[in-house]
Image (cartoon, rainbow, N blue to C red; front, side):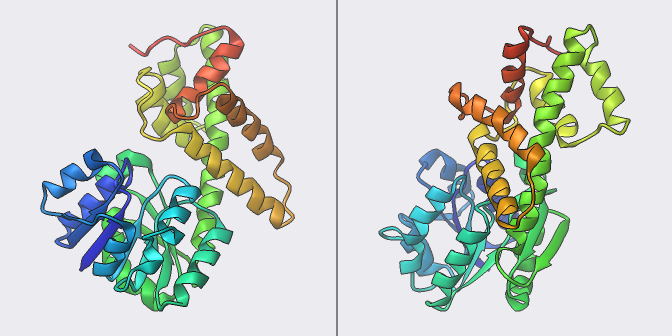
Amino acid sequence: MHVGYLGVGNMGQPMAGKLLDGGHQLTVHDISEANMAPLLARQARRADTPRALADIAETVVVSLPTLAAFRAVAFGDNGLLQGRAMKTLINTCTVGVPFVTELADALGKIGCVVVDCPISGGPSGAAAGTLSVMVSGDPAAVERVRPLISLWGPTVTVAGDTPGAAQLLKLTNNILFAVSLVATSEAFVMGAKGGLDPQVMLSAINAGSGANGATRTVFPRSVLTRSFDYGAALHILMKDVDLAIAQGEALGVPMWVCQAARLVYKHAMMAGRGDDDIGSLVKVVEDAAGFTMPKAG
């Protein structure tokens, strides 16, 4: 297929690369020349605007970090909705059910369908092709793009036949991850300040009932090494927490634990850590505890 890819940053760049690996033609657009450079070096083509991308590619993938950025490239001047060729938009962003519904309604008026396709697994999963791919939308459209989205990971889960169902599924995943990162940060600082070796803690926890996404990925890769280079910024996870709480409350579901976790993320935002790596959340707990965990040997 000839695919347009809008947003080739930490997640989009390796995901777009997987499409090239699969033999597909690729045209890319990003505000960063550096982000596009590795793909252009592999014979991807460049589009100067979102509209130009939608003028030449029937299928366009969008990978952007915020709802505001997505709204701008979709509805703004020279936006995707002004394109003439685009018939399918694959949304890989976590932007919540209301926006995806709004987007699907607007695109439907110009004969374009939305395949909602958020992913989980972080930059390392994107590079390895091991992402968890969640998808919803018109069944025929989902099957048309399955050869593309299957290149991103071995697990493709169909959440439903309407755009937005996959968003809901992704928010259940992300709120669990966000809460686990807060709890893991508190647990590790407590244990280390009490004299435990963080590496010993990690081995025991990952072999036991406390294992979670943070202990399996963020802590060994980003926190215990003190590299803080997992590849995702705290403000992005803050956005996902807000979306999940809003969705839960709209459905009449109490979000008590999520609200408590949100306070920790909000404290990090107020402390100016929004652009820091998600692993740096542990520093918020360390600062409050007056203790810094040692770097793993």
